[in-house]
Image 1: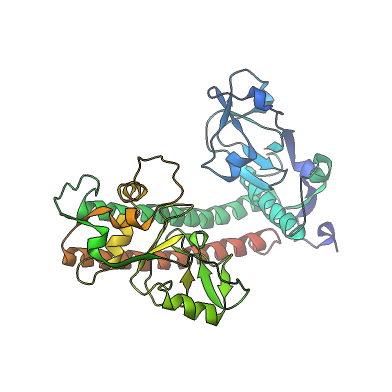
Image 2: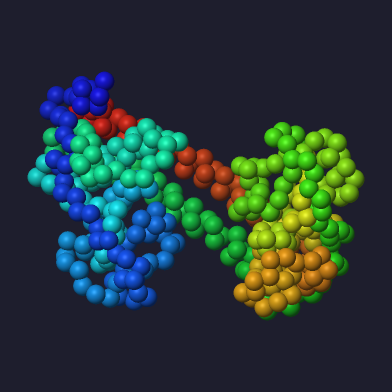
Length: 392
């Protein structure tokens, strides 16, 4: 049964995307058109990733290629998605439609929510396939459920309320990311200036062991004991997405050679991507490659949470590199790492910081669960909204 054969509530009807909006494809800007100043050019990467830089155009293009705050943009090549432009005047590139809904028959916000549901359906159907783009003629034929305008307004009001809850949760999560670094500076000051005049110690003086992982790569397997490299550390945690495994025999051999981190150790990436850090908070049956260094804090002298946080600072990393900030150095040696000097606040203060960090991490986990539930609620409302089960 096709979508347009499915039964809808009384007063609803099936329409095609081409019947409810006008779609303008963007201008085919060439790299030679790009500049470092002028009017921003919106490319698909600028829609899908806010961190991507813009290219600019210094000339003039007809107004149909202009987009302003509040306009609806749809990426239809390589990456399908619908977006509401939140910035000021810009030009939009090819492979992006600017959608102008016919507001006499469809609410603008209803259009955005409904099309996003349609796009997710298309993504599921082509999952695993190589999809380059959807041609406009086919895009125009895609079916959409259309209730009367008063019903659309009711649906939008409910979805916006749920969506706003998700956005508030996201804003709180973003602020939470800055809380631990801010707390560190408040309690200990900037390690580069040591404004609180703490005692200065070398890393070798505050650790009972500084070593690295295996300098040989054992036979890699699909199961067994995790064998971690720098690529398996992301955002201060382990990432087992593409992890390799080793046999029990190889694991025991690496344990003998001190290539197994212990609880309260701090791992520091010293090869490739320098400066990834993770605190080992519980005993784990893992072994590591030499791209990771093991920093084992001296008990009652330095707390592993404090050490992990100070090790993420540019002050620490630049010392380890032995060169100025911005160096292209891709590998550091243990001797350089051992000589890094850090402020050493009183141990009780470090412990207090560690407890506060633990409380913050617990709250972040609670917030993650809340975010998951809000996302599930929103998706449930979306499914009900466009089948006529949300409002009558």
